[in-house]
Image (cartoon, rainbow, N blue to C red; front, side, top):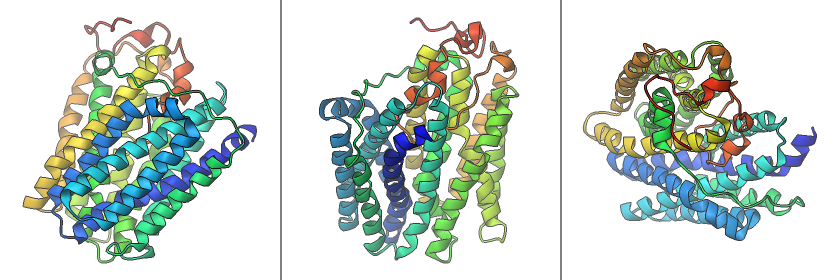
Length: 427
């Protein structure tokens, strides 16, 4: 309760912010489709958003360090509100590309402010609980945002107004808090080569997560629009997928603590292949939402499982760098996949989105399965405990993760790669 009271105002701001953010993630592709924009352009604009997210990861910490957390939160929220209102006003492709890039930068900066602040309020003993609360607030708020889209037609300004209203209200709890703002955020450091050396399975899983889950956020609502009869059906489609991932996150994590995590990654990839195929085939069938829930249950946990797989084979001091690499690899996959998948949807059919997901999962699942043929340096007993993680976050969240403090996690095996023959990187 003491920990909760210490972060309640910040969690209130987070909930309000992510309700609006969850709305705009689905609302913008629907508005673009309503305005007659092609799936190819919608994919390009989504790529702009994720590239903005990557740019925010690399550049925003310097801004937060210069002006402080509360000012940064207010400025970034105002910037995001302005960008979303301009998206409602302008319809030219160049304006949309720039504005979606700016929303990506802004939301990454807001995640940075929130997560660094939460990190300062959490002790070593309470990190896991704070992270769990934050993950719950993130997933539940973004799910709630899906249903609020139905306050009005996507062709009207009302859903946009509700989204920015929620974001504007998010400034109040943070702006009125009496607690001291935390220390400046450190610059982001990445190590893709280190991640590849430590775990090829985690590297592949992170990329697959971005290609599939990221593209779902970008183009899933456009796919649903081809089969839905009402706007509510589209938001229900998105909500069921998110809820499917949230419901299985901890059970899948529980399983991964008891078996080789690479096996769980393989199972998720193959399950995602089957569920994607089922979604593509089911269309308007009565069991359509069931297949969508199964897709969410297999696709959404890929990021958290890849992060956990990487954490097993890195030292505690490496976790922030390797975790950041997993996050940015996920974001880069989400940035580049819609460029191709949007084009396929334009020239073939909406179902090409999920057929592509199935093909990607089959390809990566085969690669992950091949990694199981090599003996892993870390035993099941040496694996670090699983921690839930949302697909969209900022690198500073890894400082809050309990695995960061496990300097001796996995003992000798923690600094060894998944597969023999790959030398550990020099520090």
